[in-house]
Length: 110
Length: 113
Image 1 (tube, each protein chain N blue to C red):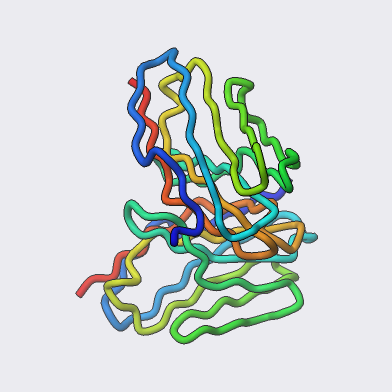
Image 2 (image 1 turned 180 degrees about the vertical axis):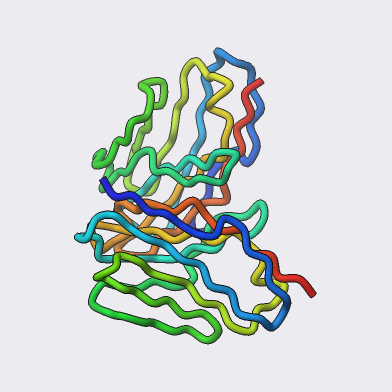
């Protein structure tokens, strides 16, 4: 069974569109995250949720809105997509030290 | 906030040689330092970690050392194999957990035959 799964794996969309990426973890972890990995491979945290509550919100544009319906799910909705949003987005979860990452969603904005 | 620098950005070694990747961090309160390996097109995966109360930790061919005074830590891979080829990321945490990891910029390791 996949521990952290996110869908879709690939997403190609036009500028200005709104899109969502879904993430689910079956590890029973309390904390979930969204990371962005740009073309230079830099990994940067965007959001962190603990038990459905937002605990970290790095300097991310308001167009990005995470939603956690329950502690096993953390979805990412992006409004008005821009070219600069093109990246790989990783969902992750952790209980204490070890973070488990999803397989990533490659978002391409054209 | 925390800032983590990582060197080198690329590293090429011959199979069987050792590889060393170094990281420095800015906040002396950081107390947890994991290393992640990311193979091409795959997800980052934890390979080893160290806490600030430990100077060295080893797991088979990989080891991590920490110098708190100098605020730097290093990953050592001995007897490198082609399957070690990947991008390696160091990270630092102020919370002792994965709850807020600041990642280094990554090192692309290439192990040649």
